[in-house]
View 1 (cartoon, rainbow, N blue to C red):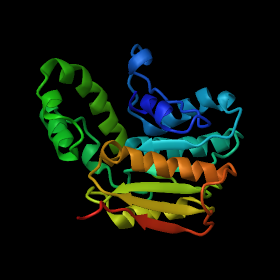
View 2 (cartoon, rainbow, N blue to C red):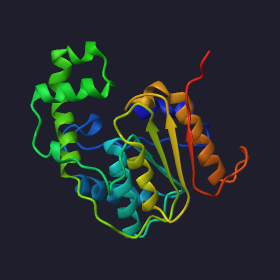
View 3 (tube, rainbow, N blue to C red):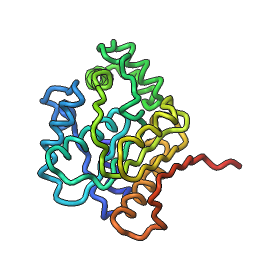
View 4 (cartoon, helix red, strand yellow):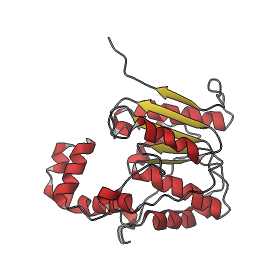
Length: 238
């Protein structure tokens, strides 16, 4: 539901459609997914018929891997390519190592991971009732991180636009490695912040997303650069 607020923050011509995974929200009665490839295939089957206009895909962290696999599965089903694949806060699929998450994490280990990622308030982590409902979902997500296996395929024909946090553990080289997944334009923007820079740098992030989509749709927002490029955005100093 985090993405629902983007509807009022992005330009009105961008129709934001958050994708809800099984086991959450309105899909609470469905089993939680633990196989990332099976989840991406399921989402491709659900979304294919709805792609009646140009679209883009955005995913953060594990969501970036699912969006990447979704783009490939949609191509396999004969769907048009996305205008852009936005991959945020995630190592490139070919270089990532999720081996430490192959087995289910204990509650204590999950809480440590959340603290290390610096994206969950302490009051939420100390709320036993909230954590009781959240930890099974998070455990399934980490299992998907551990179960992900990269498969080399023809590069995507759409541009790939990557976002990273300057202070995230994800290395600059692993962000750059997304370049090999596209035969089109590659862009890397590094924003200030840790893994959850999508919260702390939301306005900057949405501005970059809006500008990229405007260029792809032929709207006039500055000049369009067709070559690969990279930007490192740092907070102003006084």
